[in-house]
Image 1 (cartoon, rainbow, N blue to C red):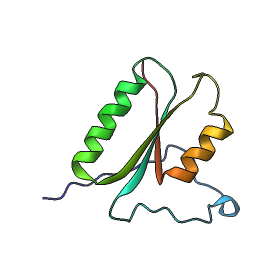
Image 2: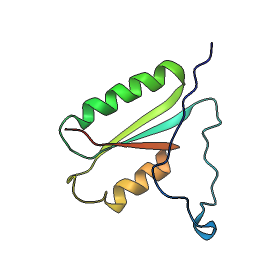
Image 3: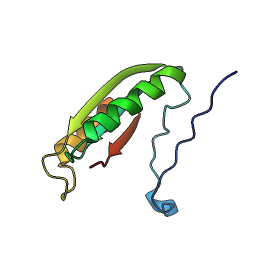
Image 4: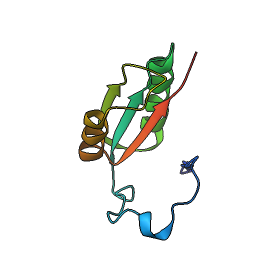
Length: 96
């Protein structure tokens, strides 16, 4: 029996003029999975559990894991650019 993974975006719908022009590549056989660790305690453990769970049911071409310097601030553009260029899907973790 195939398992289903449901991805939920916690943000509000984008206005039509802000929709991305690139189509996500999630329909491919495998994805390049991105992780953004927000540097809170145990976020790295949470992300590791997530990767292990996803790998059990979905083939991953690669995993790119990056870490912010400060949990209270947004990720620097350099980190976001790298994730955008090297991944198809990104999860950011919060933990304590």
